[in-house]
Every structure is written in C-alpha cells, then in structure tokens.
Image 1 (cartoon, rainbow, N blue to C red):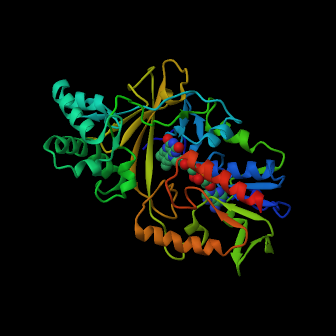
Image 2: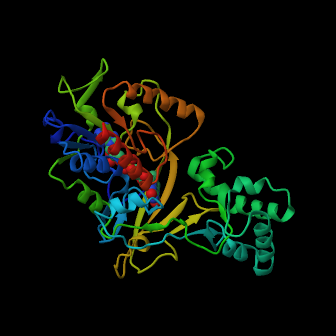
Image 3: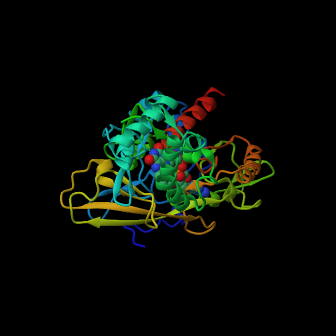
Length: 404
Ligand SMILES: Cc1cc2nc3c(=O)[nH]c(=O)nc-3n(C[C@H](O)[C@H](O)[C@H](O)COP(=O)(O)OP(=O)(O)OC[C@H]3O[C@@H](n4cnc5c(N)ncnc54)[C@H](O)[C@@H]3O)c2cc1C
C-alpha cells in the first residue's frame, strides 16, 4: 500500500530526558484536546505547561501536511470541522479563519451517485421521479418534512412503501459499507454508529447540517501551532510520556521524584497501565494516497463505495481545502481493519460495546486514583468524539481546573 508519508515512529526524542520538574502542568498529547487545555491553563491560569507529544508533529489526528506534489493532505484521514457550539467556534476563531467548505458525500451505487445522507434527491435518482415522489410523500406523511430517520427506525415500519425504502437504503448504503468499516453488519454495531447517517427527508445535500462548518484556511496543523504559541507553553515532540513519568503508590513520579503538578493525559489508558487488564480494541485504517495529474478526480469531497470495492471511500482533498493546485490532485482510499495493539497501527475507532466499556471503566478507575490526573480526549475516554466535542470538553475541564 502506498502512502505519501511513512507512519511516524514513536522514538523517545531528546526531550524525554530534559527536566520537567519546573512545570506546573504536564500535558500528554498535542492533539486538539491537549492543545486546548495547554493554551487555557497557560493563558488564563498563568501556569507553566510542558506538552509531551510522541509523534514528530502537533495536531494529533487532525494533522495536515503538504505532500510531495504540493497538495495539502490530511495524513490520518479527512477532517471536516463542523459544530453548533458557539463557544468552540469563537475560541478556535481566535487562531484561524475558516474556508467556508460545506461537506458533501455521494454514494457510488453501481455507478449511480446518490447524495448521502439519503435524501429526497437520492430517492428520485434511485427510484425515478414518479415513484421517488410517491415514496417521499409517504415518508413526509409518516415522519414529517425535514425530519431525520435512522435506518433502524425505518426498518421497523410495516407499511410496504416505507419497507421498500428501508430495504433499498439498508442494502445499498449501509450493509456493505458498515461491514467493511466495522467487520460486522449494521445490526451488530452500536446504534449510535448507523444513527450518524440517517435518512434525511429534505433536499439539503450537505453531509452536516451544523450552523458552522469549514476547514481552517491554513490547515489544522497551523491552527494548533498557533494555539501552542504562548510563552507559558513548551512543546516537546517525539517524546513518549511513558518514558518520562511513572506511577505507583497513588502518585505520579518524574525522574524518580514525586511530581506535584497537574497531569492532563490524552493518550490511551490501557497503554498507560501496561495493558494489565487486556488491550482495548479498535478499528484502524490503512490509507492509500495517490496523486493524479489532473485538476479534479471526483464530483464531491468524498465518495463512499457502498456496494463494491475493498475500500470504504475516496476523499479528494482539494474539495475540502479549496486549494488552488492546477494540474494535480491527491486522493486517499481508506481500507479499514482490526487494530493490532503494540504495533505501529493507529487506534482510530473505539469499538463500543458493554464489555469494552467495562474494560475501559477499569482503567478509568485506576486513573482516578492518581492525584490531579485528568484523562480527556478520544483515546483516554475511549469514545468517538468529533473535533468540536473534544475542544468543548477541554474548555470545560480548563474551567473546572481554573476554578479550583
Ligand atoms: C479517519 C478519521 C476521520 C475523522 N474525521 C473527522 C471529521 O471530519 N470531523 C471531526 O470533527 N472529527 C473527525 N475525526 C475525529 C478527530 O480525529 C478527533 O475528534 C480528534 O483527533 C480528537 O483529538 P484528541 O486530542 O482527543 O486526540 P488525538 O488527535 O488522537 O491526539 C492525541 C495525541 O496524543 C498523543 N499521545 C498518545 N499517547 C501518548 C504518549 N504516551 N506520550 C505522548 N503523546 C501521546 C498522540 O500521538 C496524539 O497526537 C475523525 C477521526 C478519524 C479517525
């Protein structure tokens, strides 16, 4: 599988041995969670903050970089910022302007391109105008115009027309895609997963309907760099925090000495505690980046392959970033598979089920015994969070810590 950039190793950079004893706060991870907290505690709280990041770059999974062809790509998969949270928009807008991009996704169903989430336009394309309009009238009558209906809800309907819509959408949009993405069918994944892409009784073809969406004009890496640019913050890249501090007897030690400050941890809790109860399972992705010598490859930012191919989707970055790069474009195909712990795999999607949540809860309990230790973010909390949710949670945690 080709990739424009190799996966980043996790060496212990020179910063691993540098003293951190003068710091008031240690932040583990320079993703959006860690960077938001670091900025808040340094700026509002006047704290001296050291950020330890295992990778050689900031911005976590939102990291973007210019590839060899000069195209701005998202190394860990396409990221579109969208939110209804005004505080988060205002906060991030201190560090960036937005490019106004509105995400649109199409499903390639045997060569037919249907808007996703499935909406009125998709139904007319799939069933023809006359039949499509009949089915739309049924949907409007049952659920109301402008409503969103999950595939599970729709499949419970007994009316023959609604059952026909449910069956079509299930077979052509959900079944193969979900099985590729999760390794199991739509009925076996947590309901929240399929609920993210409802049937939308509307002609709105935007993938997200949030009040604010777009990408930072200069990219996420530039945004996060700007957040971390503060005299109270020192960032050390290439440093695995597990080489810097140890835990034991209810305390955090750095270089053998007790650390009296605050620790914000945004990495995985199972790794932190040596996987002593077992590893938390995830799905990971192999990315296949390809640069083509043409202006445009596909009609929308992302095309989902919902009935064919081994990969789930293709994203063409120039749609998202609105970059002007004539004669060349970079696309990425995503191949999901199970994550292998203790390998170079990236843990992307937590597999939410009662057993895994219980396992995470056991690690969270160990973490809660450590003094002034705060686990936050998609890895530490073992939850799928969008970027805005992570920033919102980090702002709230900062409020709480600064009020203490
Ligand atoms: C394929 C994909 C697409 C996505 N698309 C979107 C999207 O379109 N819109 C959206 O809003 N969200 C999207 N997300 C979610 C988004 O990536 C997360 O919300 C965001 O990355 C969470 O930020 P974080 O800081 O919690 O975690 P991360 O970004 O993962 O940052 C955690 C950081 O901690 C570091 N770290 C971990 N352990 C250690 C250690 N021991 N020592 C030092 N450093 C450590 C890691 O290297 C990492 O840089 C997507 C996620 C995936 C997987």
